[in-house]
Image 1 (cartoon, rainbow, N blue to C red):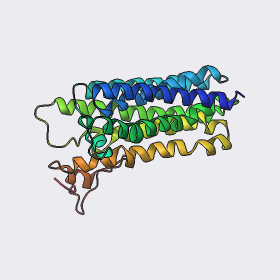
Image 2 (cartoon, rainbow, N blue to C red; image 1 turned 30 degrees about the vertical axis):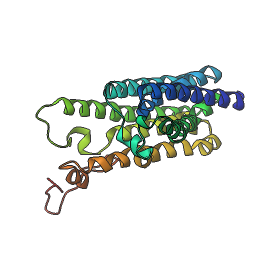
Image 3 (cartoon, rainbow, N blue to C red; image 1 turned 180 degrees about the horizontal axis):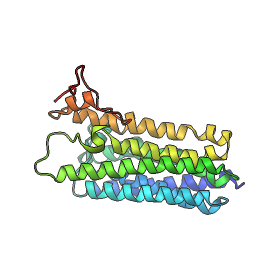
Image 4 (cartoon, rainbow, N blue to C red; image 1 turned 180 degrees about the vertical axis):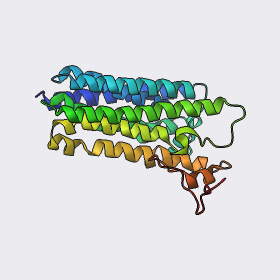
Length: 271
């Protein structure tokens, strides 16, 4: 078994460096939302740092899975946000402060975004750290984790692709309610949650009940943030103002994919 303080310290260092660099870029770009690009890259860097410190093939598998997820997500967010202004969610989080408010805006961004995001990177990476210090994993649980990861990756990647195609369509309706989006209002967030539950299964549960229990808060917190704190719920407050979205929300599950709800007699709820 490897030295837990060493692996944890290096993982924490990756998170700190990633957020310091991101804070510098955010100040130059005058928008905090650049941190969304850093998220996947920081976790990828953590997995790559952990892999050579671990025993066997599982840490390398997790590094590969994390890199595929993180690089795809960061590139997708970068392309989507390039040339755009601040994400309204961050403006709301900072109490309405913008880059025009100078040092007050930057201080609030450091305190409310970069410190929290850095801590979250380290926290979510616990299963990766667990695999780097563990030995003799249960192969069946590693395989199960990889399958859950794959389900999540498909939901996230396909959901993002369907949303991009919808935005390019000049004849699109007011709301995307086809494909995966007819079963969940946020297939990308659901996929992201599955990815980290899969990594928890392969990187922590596969190494025994104690690593599983100690690291369980990581995927739980990730799911909470995706659903309520920084993901679906804040976005929904804006989306509910769009024509047709309340009706879409009434018939479609927010996160977990479910068949569209129907009224008695078989008709869809909403338009």
